[in-house]
Image (tube, rainbow, N blue to C red; front, side, top):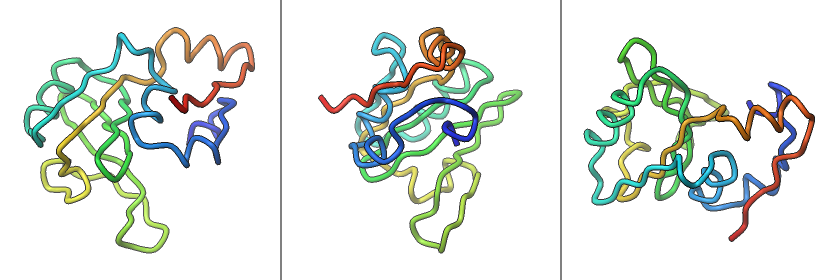
Length: 127
């Protein structure tokens, strides 16, 4: 999705990373929130409180996006239980959203937009 929007990313290398590294590649560290103990409701409420926007969310075994608009939160992700299916659903009813660890960051912050406008590649963080 990001590459199709004109962001220069190392798609294959990024896709091989743990979900936390995907998040830290796209979002500055000081703008990332970590949630532990599988508190999905707490994650949804915290992101809703941050306001409208698109957030990347790294999970134990998956990665997706939280789309927040007018206090409604949708979890958008590539299904790993169906063939080539992308779905947006209520995160609190989504099995893939169930995770002991959630790493969340709002996309399109200053550095990300600067890279997009300048055509600079967003380097994949591997450590």
